[in-house]
Image (cartoon, rainbow, N blue to C red):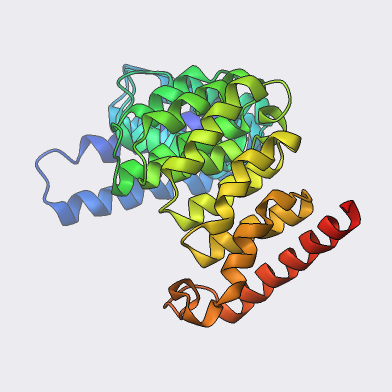
Length: 340
C-alpha cells in the first residue's frame, strides 16, 4: 500500500497538471479540467484521517498555484474527519490565503465535529480580522450564532459593521453577531448587548434582534447586572411601544426583575395593542399587581366598542385576547378582595 503522504502527493501533482492547463481556455474547458481535478479525491478518500496532514501541507504551500491549494482545502473538507480541523483552521486564519479557499475552509471547520472551543477559537479569530472577506465573515457568523466566542469585542464590532440601520444580508449578519454575543460566556457580552440595543434606532429590525439577544441572557440581567440593565429595559418599554413583537419580549424580560417589574408593567395595562395588553395583564396578574386593576377594568367596560379588539389580519383572535385579559383581571380582583 502506498504511504498516505505519497498518495496525496501523486494526486495533487495531477491536480497541478489540470490547473496548469487552464489559462487561456474557455469556460467549458476550464469547468472540465476542474471536474478532472476534483475527481482526484477518489484516490485520497480511502486514506481517511491520514490524508489530512499532507493535504494541509499542500494548502499551506505558497509555491503551489492558488487553485491547487484551493482544491487541497476542498479535499480536507471532504474527509469529514476531525483530523482536518487544524489545517483548515490555519487557512481560515491566514489573511494571505485565497478568499475562496478561506471560505471553503470556514465551511469545512463548521461542518466538522470538532470540539466547540476549538471551533470558536478559529472562527472568532477570523471575525476579529478587520479585512476579512465578506463571504468568510458570513460563514463564520452562521456558526458562531450557535457557539458564541471566547471574547466579545469582535462580535460587537461585527454587529456594528454595517451601521445602525442594516438591511438585507447586512441585517442577517448583524443578527448573527448579536445571537453570538448572547451565546458568549461571562458578563462582558451582556454589557455589550446593553450598549448595542441602544445603538440601533428604535423600531428597527436590528433593535428588535438586540432585544431578543438580551432576553436570552435574562438570568444575568436580573441578578449581577440589574443596576445597568433596569434603566435600559425601562427605556425600551417606552421607546418600542409601537412594536408589538418587541414589546412581548420586553414584557417577559421586565417580569423577571421581581418587585421592580411592577412600575414598568402597570402602565401597559392601557396599551393600545390588544396582544401586548393581554401579555401585560397576565404578567401583572402573576405579580399580583392590583395597581393595574382600574386600567384593566376600564378596558373591560366596553370591549365591543374598543378598536383594539377589532379583527386585524395576521394578528391573534381578539376574542382570545379579551378572554386572557378577563382571566388576568379576575385574578387581580381576587387578590384585591383578599387584601381587604
